[in-house]
Length: 183
Image 1 (tube, rainbow, N blue to C red):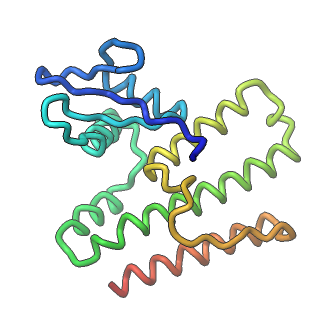
Image 2: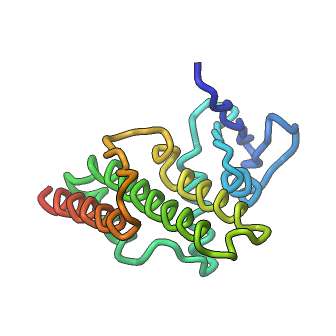
């Protein structure tokens, strides 16, 4: 048995309206983005066919944010993603992205932990909320893979300094990039 709650089930009606089955009301894409930012997993299904539409709606949320100038993904990354759909490399792209986000998440978590130890701002109200929001963002971007333990992950060295940990993350990212380039 797992201790993770079931994903929030959202049903899409023929009218394209989205229905939250837990609260029995209609929701918007922004509402769904809010659920995800709060750390909740969602599953969006077509009421009539039963098709899973989650990926399509999550991509729409990202596209909406990008079109409003809330850019997270650089043009080069978007271009490489488009290219990956037409090349043999597309099979490694999801794993590469999940690994990259996991390394970024670990690096930022280490930095945040170190800031908490030496930075008086860490005790300010809202700091923990910011950390939780950051974690929810990475979980959303990796489809939960970042916290689900997919792929291999080296155990962190408890004796390593923050700069050593950052160097290790940079090396791992470079290795992943080299593997992707070879493909």
